[in-house]
Amino acid sequence: MSTETTDVPLREKLEPYIAIIGPMVMILAIILFMLAVEPARYFRLSNMNLILLDAALYMPMAMAMTFVITQRGIDLSIGSIAALSGIIMAFLIKQYGFSVYIAVPIALLLGALMGLINGLIITRFQVPDLIGTLAMDLVYRGLALVLAKGLVLARFPDLLTDIGRGQIPGFIPIPVVIGIATMIAGYWLLTRTYFGRYTIAIGSNPEAAELTGISVNRHKLYAYVLCGTCAALGGILLTGKLNAIQATSAPYFNLHVIAAVVVGGTSLFGGRASMLGSFAGVLLLSMMVNALVTLRMEFFWQSVASGVVIVSSVALYTWMQQKDRDGAGGWLAALATPDGQKTLRFSAAIIGLLIALLALGGIFAGDPNPSG
Image (tube, rainbow, N blue to C red; front, side, top):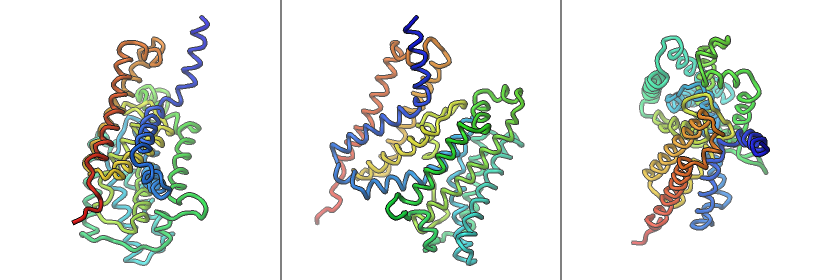
């Protein structure tokens, strides 16, 4: 009797942090491996700055995607929205002489409009999220290609480059401040507002949420508008970071952001969300990609490593969610079962495979300054 009373509070205390355990373990594995292999190059201050800048680019989109996925949705068009918003903003500044103070809000409004279009297609025309946003991804990318006509728009005012890569004197980079601020806002929305509660309720059971009086379609619309706005913000940050933008920019934004959110413990089946987990997922993927670059591994190996992390995370969280539904002490008790032990061994094997990929990069990477 006493064991049962102590176990239940322990599970309740651990539950809010379950989502970040997976990415934090992987982050720790990367840190330990790079400490052993490339400590001087990987942990220098300039490289840490690069990791933070890369992670900040995806933080706003990961925050918004957390709400979309929690509602059992998906948005595959955020890369195209980012590119099209950035292209239009660039034309307003370069071709029409608009101030950055005017062009940036217009880009954000355009992103919100594209998110609204996505939401209307899904809620009004009953097009599945996957098909609807994939089709609109083609539309938005096509419009960007038509507008840009192969041009690379570059050399923007200092104010825009400061947004993308500037630094507050004696503090952290401006885009990192923006990214963390959006994650904090997302955490507040998810945990302290009706919008967050309704989002989880819709993802858990849309029919039951509708019966309780929640306007499911309207809240889905809100989530897609938020996602479009944050995608446009990502396009603005990318333009400022590179001091350039073209129609083919941000080709893998959607996969990177969805991967970060799923790795962070937000369930693709809806009803389970973690903003802290999404933040940890973004940081993990940025650290992993940077580690592979530091080891001079080819881009294709980076894709392999990302795929391994995504598959293992989805498998692990699906198993955990199944154990939650099964009861019998929840997933903590289930870890002591033979099936749970197999899951632990599988997770250890995945971490080992990730470390092996990093090791391959260190072994087979050629001399960056070959002689002769």
